[in-house]
Length: 151
Image (cartoon, rainbow, N blue to C red; front, side, top):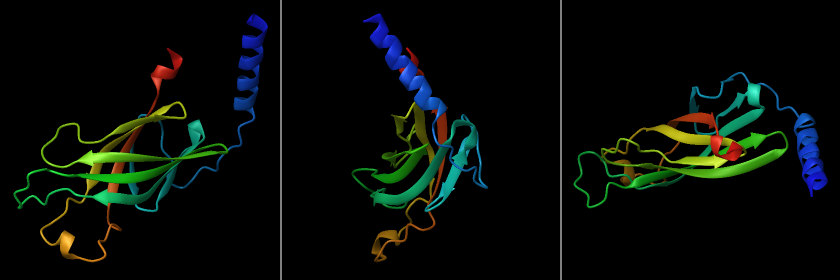
């Protein structure tokens, strides 16, 4: 049993050493740093061999500030996370209203990705436009090492 565990750890370690390196992009950040992104923008965290992309706005239902709504609504976005040859898509939600911790966080590939900020907030005529324009959406992500995988 001990040999099997050691063998598995050696394979995992060897695999990490041979992880294909992603190129460093012009927008390069560090873990624990605020990372601003616009729709269709890609950034790197070269020190950890990561790329992050703001793919799209999946759904928007937040209540404009001047409206009276029964529910404050939320917005859902899609992020692409790449590490070496691995590519994953995650969805994060951001709550409407006056919440203090508005954004979701997801653990993926040994990291915790949190949606810290999202703008703009829908205005009075946002929902009357067809199709809705999500091209000016901006987010701020925070990427940290996921401590849970080491405990």
